Length: 111
Length: 120
Image 1 (cartoon, helix red, strand yellow):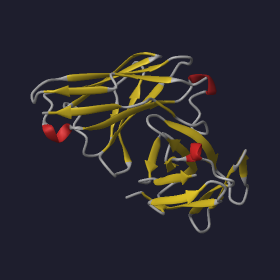
Image 2: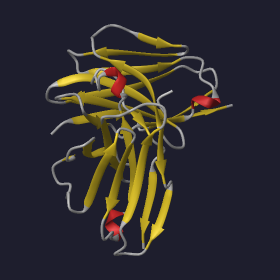
Image 3: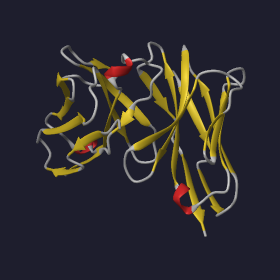
């Protein structure tokens, strides 16, 4: 059975801090790993990673994948209160339609 | 772009009722839409893949006669929870991939806002 594990489950930081969110996976027929941000409702897409070692960046967010260690991290620098959300990691497998999600990391950024 | 609208956002109904949830892609066409369920403090779990013009593909353990899926057009998929019971109470969320990308699995799925279903 495919498995995606995120850590920590929750995290409270102060504005300006840097955070690292972790995602490990054990799946059959890996295609890609995706990160989503879920605030109150719909998860919004952040990154899709398919190759090891290539960092993807978007503003203060960045992510990288290690296919040897079956692991990805999501970094957020200079955190702001607007970064407070649940961050979901998902792995796409097989023909590419199935996404297996982790339980998410609840991030709270305080003033 | 890539907006997915889901309706209703919240349903409360009595046991035995059938409930229909709609998932629409507003600014793109989707050959394939996906239905997920999320229990409190648990992961999003894929229930079924909805294919326009053909039968849905259900994940193992999901009853197709219980969760009826219809994907009649390139912008609309519906999930009907038939004869709902309290154990069906959950958060149901749909996603879609833009057909213009060829339904390419190297493109992300875009999610709706979800439907909170409560069966009394």
